[in-house]
Length: 415
Ligand code: ATP
Ligand code: MG
Image: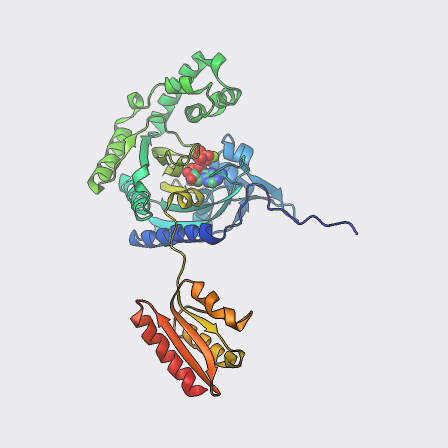
């Protein structure tokens, strides 16, 4: 008979277990705690949407839509896409569910997102994001609130030290049109030196040449005109209010006039929290204001601002969380005491004490096995003169030991 090849993990996906799992859990628990401090509600949305939701809101000319989406017709022929990010789906839900009545709506979510990219350290095809958005708030205070929250999250994760907040403004529509014209003139003058990708961008979305990672584009992008000369009074005032708010909250930031976001709907604030500790994948958290998005989906003009962070990249940066410790481990040293051992184990867990029992393999070796598990109290169960006897050994866990002894007393009374 032909040998069957065992299946392999699909390229760019991950099996998250052990220490990695603890890192993920810590990132998520910290995020959940911080978002509650800032009054954000959690939403959970579908993993797939109608392809148009992403194509229209992210923009056909972006890498995400043109190269990275997992799109397929389902069995009924409907065009679906696995979410490559959260913002578009949240905007869709806002319209489908009539969440206008809750504005300003502050929501967070987290989970798997999918992009067809070349896998490498910190870059996967199925990865995970945490995400925070405020819909229906046009004031710069919303941008400030999200940035201060992101900063607190990074502090609570213990990684703020190596991470810098880079901030820019993309201005309002008038600013952007004027700046875009200046950029086009600059790039046209260097047409012959640009990469093929950037020649396409020049026709469709010239701002994104600033974002190019191609070494042929970098000198031309770096020499491009800054937005500052084109900012309207309103756009300048908005940016000043954001930076004043950050200063008031004690959040450090630096201006990066080259920072543009890959997605088409961004206005005003654009930002990235960047580290040099992750090689080329240095952006851990990124976002900005997207006042044009809900309108582009066919909804009423609605302000929006938000960010997303890659959980893998955050998980790589944090210190390894401690391995979980049990309250009690039981060594069943005599098989005739099995019933009492089972009673004790169930009783401990029902009393809210974490516990494991070693009851398999050679009875003589179980004590050694049990003593190797990380636990505050070791309980040995044996038989003597037809009776079950319980011996406990604890180091520095008087309170846990007292609770365990109360459960042991109940088991002894019942047996
Ligand atoms: P990059 O420039 O690294 O491709 P991006 O601009 O595509 O990032 P966003 O769309 O802003 O990224 O996504 C927000 C965050 O999600 C990123 O800052 C990063 O931490 C994370 N991220 C993006 N793509 C991936 C990926 N393929 N694998 C793991 N994390 C990712
Ligand atoms: Mg990308």
